[in-house]
Length: 364
Image (cartoon, rainbow, N blue to C red; front, top):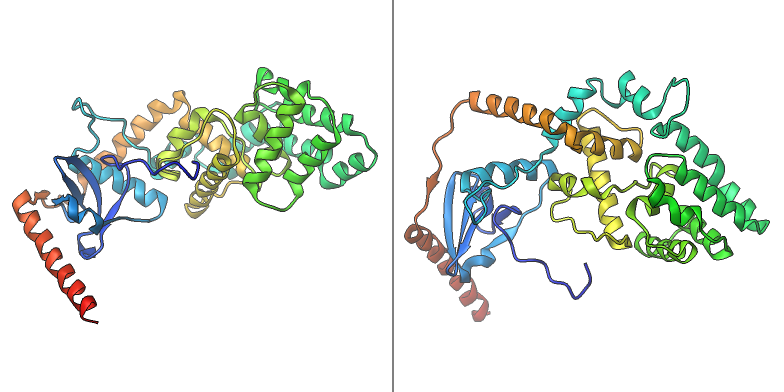
């Protein structure tokens, strides 16, 4: 987002709030916004209405991503914020707990299990497949290690650098053949070689380095770049530090890991920094749940496995089981609704407090 862009107006159910003076009410979501008033559904079960002059009392709240996703889903259901203008239910927001259960349904032992290692890492595989990450990482480390790159650059062998870029890109399933074309036909140059080295091993700001890498690849390949192409090489050369990007899963993954994530079809450094932060959040959440991934390639494959169309049925089964478990829990008191008059009274109390504070400030 550029410096001239403004934060979009809040939408029902899109973020969490907390009242600055009534922490005991818990978190809240915006339920509706109309006629100069906003209704907020709070954790304590009440829907409170505020007029425009009191919007400032509701500040956007921060909490761990999966807790936020659970609260958004729960409060959204209570408030009806999950419905669109036509009254139809919007897509239910994904939570980490749901995504993890989808993963464990297919891979009960997680990343350490034989099923995952055989299928995705290629451990013990009789022959190398493009989806086998350990082979790709080992080959990339040999082809474009810091020592290998420095040797090629010192020798002026920039054609070999370009060739190795193409070999790495075409050696995995992170990029389709059509997407790989700009690198496969890239013109070698000292600038490209040094730019690749700088991005992989240099210091400096990530966003600026990513944008420079995109510029050099575009100049060398003379064809529009894609997210998979630009991120494939860093993801296999340095899988602990960089992530491969598959745009088709980003929006779904961002529902709990990076709400309101924005990115364009054209790769850029600012968006990549956000996507990388999202991948790190997923990695940290998996680690915290007792299923540490080996690297960000495991995180990438976790996203693909759990968010692919074929996993939709598994997700539906997971949600059905989780909803049944929730329904079996002791029933909570029915949510109360604070009518507009009562809510305004509470708002007036806040106004009185603010007037006292202002009076005290003016008296100083």
